[in-house]
Image 1 (cartoon, rainbow, N blue to C red):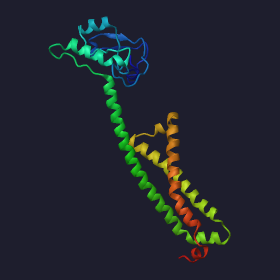
Image 2 (image 1 turned 180 degrees about the horizontal axis):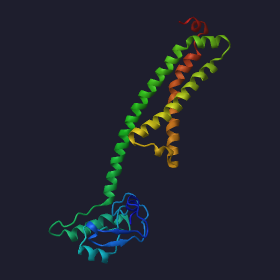
Image 3 (image 1 turned 45 degrees about the vertical axis):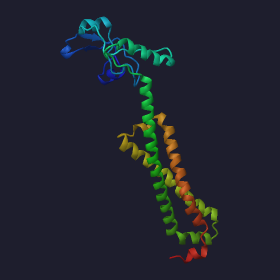
Image 4 (image 1 turned 120 degrees about the vertical axis):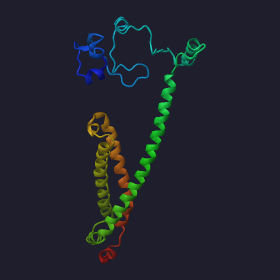
Length: 239
């Protein structure tokens, strides 16, 4: 029994299952659960019921096959084996379709590469827009606190302390924004957030949060530098 089929139907070793409409092909006892394999180009056993050939021929009265899997010992022989099969089986009329799984894999890889490029482009544009928004927010923060900055500078605060204050603000904005954004995107696109708590996903979460923090810090450098280099007297006079 395939692992996915067993899991979906709550089947365990020793369980009995009925085959066919109303059990017309008999009842079988499950002798084992096949280890999960995942996507396959030949025969996917995850959702399959594997029986003996004698039982299948006796129950379904068939002596033919609708699919045959041919495995080569070396990929270098793949093209020649495919050519031989086509010549032998399709001499006059086309009887069988021969599918080269390597070509299928190359097509899938190429398609995923194009999708990745497209998504990366969208992500890059979104990051630029987000960076501009963060820069505007930080500039507004500096503008609204010019008088406060003037007071701090007049009582002895150094430029690096004022600059650090705004960089810390950008850091907090990056940490909070990255975590909220990651949670929201996972909820909307995957309809679940359980993958955020899987150990294998932690490294991706760390990369995502780190990238968001770096972007916020880069966009906060100029506003912080401008705040640190304000003239204290002009800042105190600002209304």
